[in-house]
Image (tube, rainbow, N blue to C red; front, side, top):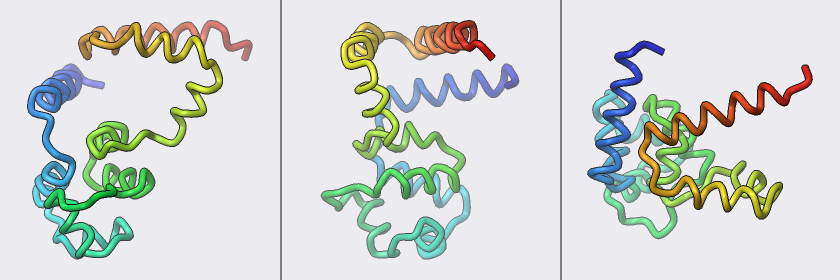
Length: 137
């Protein structure tokens, strides 16, 4: 990853944290910026144009499923995890990860709460390194 990409991602994380746009507003802005019509985007995601319109106007009680959010993220070039969080959804793999270590994982998440994006990235890198070192392959 280039320095420019890292800087751009950090700036986006800062902007997303500072502004916290609503899920629907964010989707509409990104969809139009990518040149997708409402009908075409809805078709590609597998939802009705009416439902997408309601999502974009933040007029739905239940946001799209995680699978549909993943598809939106893929089409828009965004992070599925970020979009899921904006929509109030939890990625499907996280409950199993937490349940696999019911004391340690919640404790780790609580300890990491409040860290800056840069600190979280360092922690993530350290965890990845520890996992690689423990991998017998």
